[in-house]
Length: 401
Image (cartoon, rainbow, N blue to C red; front, side):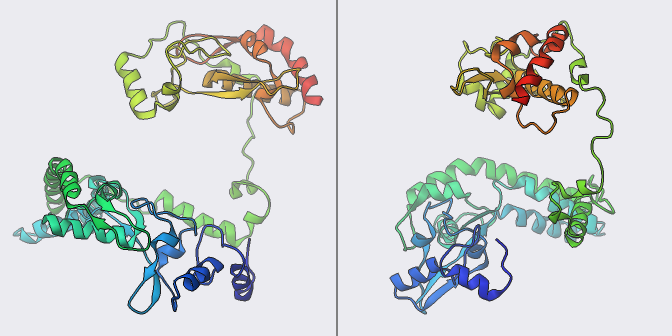
């Protein structure tokens, strides 16, 4: 909801949460103050920018379990953005190497190159964690006398802290040491890469070429103007589509059927399958070798197809298909079958002028889908055009009803 005044906001917080955010003025915060007999809440920015039901990814404590009384008898609620200090180390090494050269050749573009590549040398993304867990990282490094440019990741911090509600976690020094030993080899390798990157930048022999106006800048600028002109209030999403038509050249309603079909497609190798499973194997591992698509009857391997970018993919999902019974029937169909069902429904809607009808797969039976397609291994389906023409009026009647 939108608030029209501060009074309205504070009145809302007396009874309800502010969705996605938090506040010292909320009823939950006031309950915590009363429970701990505190003078009030001492919050920081990250606490307010996270919802009231947020939990720390390290210690898994909720906000009511994180707060504790400080020396002023206020409840401290502080969160911090925990980042890999290796990013700072890259910039520092760049400066050191550049300053040591007899002639400085680095410039601002060199520095920007360092900033862009530093992130790639980080072991983890900047992550919001509670202040106690952020301190546990620093404390563990001091106890183990580790390099200051090293940082434990959130999951690594979780491996060696002993957690108690409303108290600072203790550090299991033995587990912290074991965690460091697992990181040591890669940390040394990352340090080597840091020196290489910093040296390249300091010698101004990098490959970064900045744009005068980036695509990100255009997007941010246009977002400002779209909101300034109130185009976000006109009911069309994305907002910019209020200013132009996106479907001037739809072509024939059945043009989707005319994709190029290869009689013989080279199947994915064992290595390509293993790569697919390692990176995006969720669907693959949900089923076994005997699985078959209920639409095209292809095996799991034969349902693997290439994307437009040339990557191999496998996916399926349970789809609700049309049935004369009242029972909600769902069938596991591959992505190729799902695309056919969706595109054919769009074709029927366009040809029979029923484009306002919602839904796609639910207008065709699994048996009809099976007759509509001519399956080929490892590529999109060929379409039985004769049967498709017969089926159009059948689906049109269903849409009307």
